Image 1 (cartoon, rainbow, N blue to C red):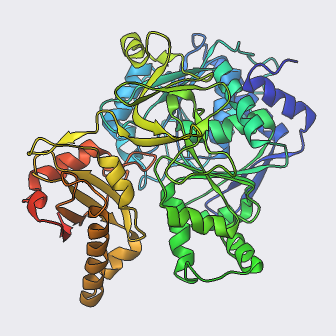
Image 2 (image 1 turned 180 degrees about the horizontal axis):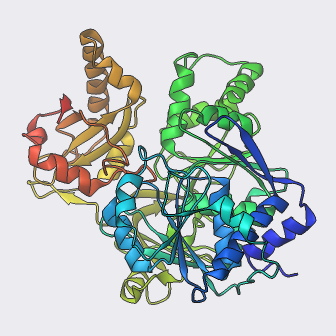
Image 3 (image 1 turned 60 degrees about the vertical axis):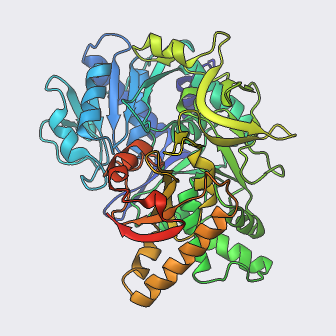
Length: 551
């Protein structure tokens, strides 16, 4: 048997380690269930048999909507085993975007998984599902009388013995990018791309079958899809899932991951939580360091990654003192999350590392980062013109990010090519470098803007702990003074046309649900500006003041 695709690799593990646990899934009733490679294969094969019984055209598009779970990946396997293409959807999609994706990809079947109707868009999405679409309810799905349930289907269909073995060049998945502007684009990746990613990532990370991963970032996103699903299928890794936000720490401690990937917001929350009990500069013994990592569930992590935004130097140094070096990563859906990683021992704060093996990188005359990767997409689904626009004549992908490199070839992201804005004085401002300077434990997210103002200003959403301080008058004034000091400290480092006229603390939290953040927790700059620019009230003329709780 060859190892040309992730399906081939799964069949290998199903055959060679059938009784080894592949998935560990916590359920809402408090139970925790282990699924072996053999059991995963049995269920996926039964679902593949059902999909084949529908007699769909070969390589039909089949969507998966749900939060991470063991059955999410089982559904993905079943789709491939039946000879079709999987289309993962973010559970936080709004109804308009979901309807667009359903129609754009002409999905024939929809798997609906773990959703709660509160932290996702299910209550709206369910009303735009096409009437002709077959629906399958995964375990932990919301009540859906119009659908068939996974367990009933699996019981009624014997496991498919001769599964489809796709060619490496065959389309495996269409991943709709969340994007911060415009409609999502369907990024097409082949089975070969996914295999190449996992093979090369394994060389970098040194994966083996004793490694453990925790799956909690959206599987519809390129980073989690590659890091968790592709690596686990290719290298035979064990995957633990997280149940809820409330159970996250317990789920993390159960998994005790050996390789862990997260985003700056979570690394910062860990830091703030520990610092509330142990001062950040307190001397720590080896035993104390190990105890802190153990309490976070990170005691056995040998590789830790961060990405999507910058972490401040003091937080990176704090983790380093604990014995955990955070390796920054830079990639995107279009290259299947394979582009730049920081190497152990070569971390430079503010830089995302050097190109991975096989990756070519260059900086264009306008400062844009351009890459050519062995994992490059097949193109954008049904959008050949957009695909052509995204590539240079010699095949480099135009990332849209601006960057610069140091003497070791490490890359620094300096903003977006199109993010520059012009103040009313006619001066151009790059917001991202200023936003990075405003990183602070009391600030959850920040957006620098001001195209209609004489000077730029910053909009800031407070961290949850800081929000509580506003309720007390004395604490509120102390917080204002702390933010004022931060504003003055940052302004001292900026050119005159970049100096912030104000730091405006917003009243409404920014979230995925209200559209201010993407599913990967990045700010949606256009949505934020649409909401606040009309209410700027001279925020660009205050000469460096903090404004508390603006609507």
